[in-house]
Each structure stands twice: as C-alpha cells, then as structure tokens.
Figure 1 (cartoon, rainbow, N blue to C red):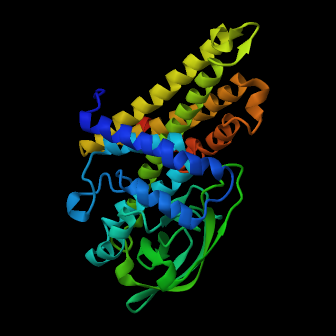
Figure 2: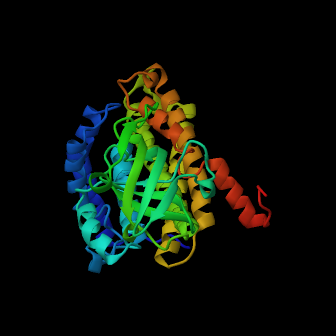
Length: 380
C-alpha cells in the first residue's frame, strides 16, 4: 500500500478534534493524572468526543455512524492517544463494542448501539482470565444453557472499562464451544473491582465477577460455538488499537522533548544544539513516523476489505517496543527533571511500559508473524 496524502475532509476533522482535545480533554487528564476519573466525568468527555466521530467513525450511516474510513478513524484515535491514553482506552473499548454490536441481532443493536455511539453507554470486552494468559482458546468460564437463557459464572481479569461498563461482551464456554454473550450490568448483574497498576490509573482496568447471571440466548454475539472466529477479529482490533496508542505516546514524548530541548540551556546553549540530544530527537521522530506509516498500511488494507493480520502484528510490535524506547529516551533527555512529576515524560514512560502486553504480548505477536512467514507453528 502506498502512502496517501490526507484529504481536505480528513485534515479538517483532525484539526478540529485536536483543538477540542487541547481545550477540553487535556485539562481533565492533567487534573486526574494517576487518579481515577469518575464515571460521570468520563461520560461527559466521551459524549463530547462522540461528536467528532469516535466511536462511530467507521459504523455505517444506516446504523447511526459516520460511515468514514478506517484510515480516518486511525488518524482521530492517534490524536486522542497523544492527548490522553486513559481517555483513549475508554473510547477504544466503546469502539470495540460498536463493532461487536454490528454482528448482534437487530434487537440488540437497536437497544445498545445508539447509546454507545453517543458516548453515553460504556462497554467492555471480557476475554482474559487469570488461568489462561494469552491462550484465549482455553477459556474456562462456563455458560450453561437453561431453556432460552444461559447461566454464566466466573471471573474475568484485566478488563479495560470494567468499572465504567454498563454492558460487556463476554467470552464463555457453552455446550457448542467458545461463544460470546452480551451481559447487561443492570439487567443481569455483575460486580467490578479496579486493579492497581503502575500507570493508566485514571481509567478503569478491573476484575469482573459474575455470579449466576441469567442471560437470554438472544444476547449471543454471532453464532453459538463460533467464538474462535470472533476472538480472532477482536485480537486484530486490539492489536491495532494498542499500536496506535503507542504511536500517540511516542508523539507526546517527542513533543515534550522538543519543547524541553529548545528551551533548556547548558553551558550557554540550548541542549537541542548538542549532537547527542539532536540524535535522540531524530531517532524519536524516525520511530514515531515509522510506526504511523506501518499503521497507515494496515488501515489502507482494511479500507480495501483485505486481511491484515500479519501487517497489524508487525505494526503493533514495532510501535509498542519503540514507544518504550522513545519514552525512555525522553526521560533521559530531561535529565534529573525527567524523573520528577513536574514533567510528563515519566508518566509517558510508565504508560509505554504497559503497551507491549495487552492485545497479545509482543512475543505472542512475533510467534504469529513467524508462523505466517515459515508455516511452522510455535506451539503444537
């Protein structure tokens, strides 16, 4: 795929969104740095963000979305990630829920999609459990058929949007195999508890506890027993979103470093004039641009209706690992100031350290890339 210059429409959409983020979202993110953003406050943000096309950018117009391209969505999401990874994670899960609802029954779509597109309803995708790690095919959570309902019991872990969630799509083991059901907090009941982490604490990453939730069979997403195919699609989406978050982090770290290096002086000169500092800034820019271009290839393939599993994994591995390096260099460039909370780069580094893990670790992505290239599986 060749590089395409953004259209006038895309440029205007990005510029207006960037202005909004700087004026409305960044101050809130700064206020709640490393502190949990209350659900009411987050909902105010997501409702405003929804006006600019997230999460409904690629949802067809007939379903209430914008009907725009994946490339445009990626450009908008990068802007949000560069402003606040915490808010971006919340919106990311609502984006994933909208994709899932398009595969749901018309009744479920009518009930949940409009509120999700408006940023009023929060969703989560519940795949992870403590016992299985990255092996999603071995999910043990059971959904026992009881007439026209399933009874669901178990615990899901590391669930983004968990405490915020009004509904979530849950991977379960039914009698026909791996399946996905939509569970409503108010109608079916579940409990949530936030997980303490080294970063991204302003949003919700949680454990979800489900006890005898009685869920109608009409809440299946896709066909019963077809969960592996659904999980594969979710895996590609997660891979892409985590990668774009990483690009956003690199962009933020680069911006902070340029601002610091062109103002801070040593021995009578701004440090940007020092060769080693200049080299670091150049390397940050190279990695940031390379990550963005890799994802533009992915979005181009998606817009063309082509598979992009391997390309998405390549882009995610590069971007996630590069984000750690770029944010580490940003801290180093700031010297002693870099390890203080007075500057944002220490937070950016902590957030970057999390990027190679969700959505399938970079090692898992590497296994998939190598299998596609060699035809040899890493596991029997």
